[in-house]
Image 1: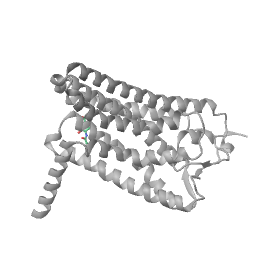
Image 2: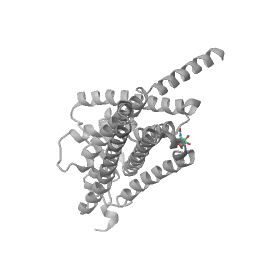
Image 3: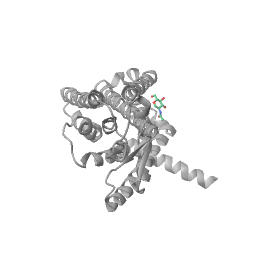
Length: 312
Ligand SMILES: *[C@@H]1O[C@H](CO)[C@@H](O)[C@H](O)[C@H]1NC(C)=O
């Protein structure tokens, strides 16, 4: 058999829980609500930060950029997934799958680095407040941003280059709602052990490493604050608890997905849904609605819009 004969699969079929119509209807409603909420929440953050002169600080720039990544991240999988939940036969083309995996890994990787940058930003703001504006200069913020894009891209491309010319010859059922690398690789008609190991190593390593860096940096901030003053700790705790919540909810499913060595029945399918619609929804909720400055700015934006519509 030559290579051309092997690659006969041109589309993949999602099997994810197709036998239960009720569960699919529930998942359809659930995902639609959270997808729309993620879109609106993140758009609101971007609009508020770009339009409000009081929010022109590094922290908000990073937050708005994180929201942009969230918008791309959830839009790369959720619309197709939601549409598919209502279809009997859920198919996706080979390149559709590759594009989906490219965007989820590129934006996901970028977000991890952005979260680390945001932790660094909080470290400087809390522990070296006098040097904050010189250390987090606009130029440096852009450099951090570019670095996070580059790392996200490298993370995604280095996995996909090994996958695009895998031979697929028969089995084409993905037991999930979205394309994910571990399942995709397993379908190839070739010895995939090394490739599977590489995917786990790459995605697993970047998730675990970012998670550890973040947790260590938060502990470091708390210890530094505690040494300096006993009163500062509660304020720092309240700022950091938002970050830590996001980090745990963001990385928990990912680490489980890529690093947990034992196969599970349905849990990882639900985690895929959680990951594509709930995680992008968390940033607006946690960073924004607990944040006074942001709430004030949104109210201001709201008043402006209302006044504007009265005039015109
Ligand atoms: C993203 O971050 C960069 C660098 O800080 C900033 O120039 C840009 O305006 C940010 N984007 C948004 C939408 O805030």
